[in-house]
Amino acid sequence: MNQPTLYDEILDFDNRANPWPLYDKLRSQRVWEEPDGTFVVSTFREINGLLHDPRLSSDAHNLLPEFAAKLPLPEGPGETASFIRFDPPRHDVLRRMAMRQFGPPHRPGRIDELTPRLGGIVASLIDKLAGKQQADLVGEFAYPFPVAVICHLLGVPTEDEPRFSAWVQPIVDSLARPTPEQVQARDDAMRHMSQYLFELVQRRRTDPGQDMISG
Image (cartoon, rainbow, N blue to C red; front, side):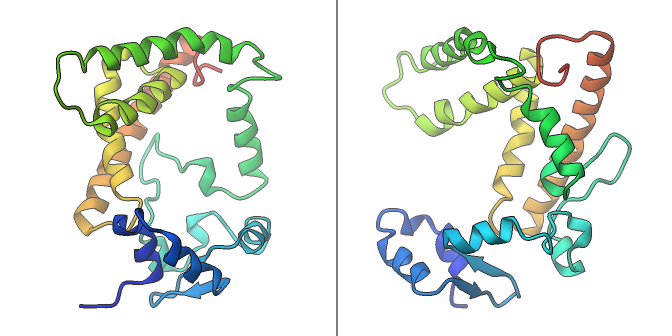
């Protein structure tokens, strides 16, 4: 059996109960090189420096082929990468467009407007737990709550939330070290989600609302 890499140790749930030995290991060295040529950087100063270093790119097209292959890239009409995957100045332009929808100064009443809706989502999820002797708080509350909020912010109709949630799960499952099957499931989910959001954008162009996509 291969020795787990430091990155594997970070993702290992067995280390959650007692993370201190792992923290000590991370602090003992600022940068760790992994066998596959990637690096684990765990200190604030170094991470902050990397995030602001113009020599580094967030664009998957600028990665070496062996690393780019691990990331989903847009393939068809209506598909595009997240602005997280772009470099300045395009990243900055798109980020400003998105951020202005979340609150001050462009939408000063946004948080207050959301409060009743958020309370309604919480109440609905709690109501579903009524009469149960046991409940999975992550699966039945902590996970569906943010998905429902994201759908509301984007303007996804309530009846479409189950579809949206089903697409999100394979994407979340692929964030660590995904298997080939998980990569395929992620790519399929992202393709369906991209096409759905593309069509939703077209509808909002002619029938805008108060949601983020309309903004």
